[in-house]
Length: 160
Image (tube, rainbow, N blue to C red; front, side, top):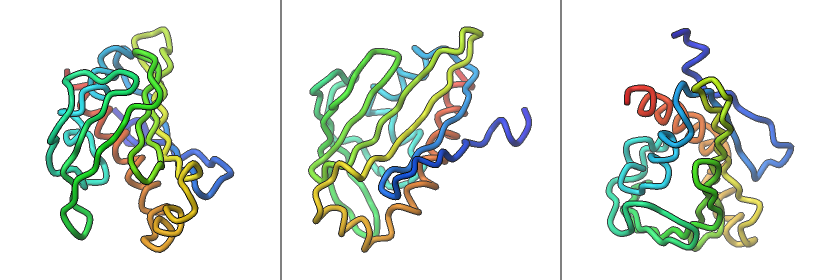
């Protein structure tokens, strides 16, 4: 595997509040989706290194599912997420109280590989949340975390 194939490609969205990246994974969409719709596996693929523990939620997420995480970013805190988009093996997105959203889109390439795009969308957050994200310099940091998450997802899926 070349270095380039194990790196996520940063996508310019044209919106400074929306950060995205994509990666080609040599695995079927159903296998990749099994990591995304099971919150107990999110710590394994978290490129931000902020998830410390899954504290609540089902083994398999569906539209409307809620799941809680113990997090650490300077301080320890808990967050409750809600699944707001769901199409099995194709798309899943969740948000929390801040209303920003993490979205994964999977496109079957027809050859046993899947193109996965992750998007962090802060544009849907209320103004006060956007101010917080800006103050914390979250947008540039999140762009890197999104890319790292995709690399970790690729490593996990391809090792199965």
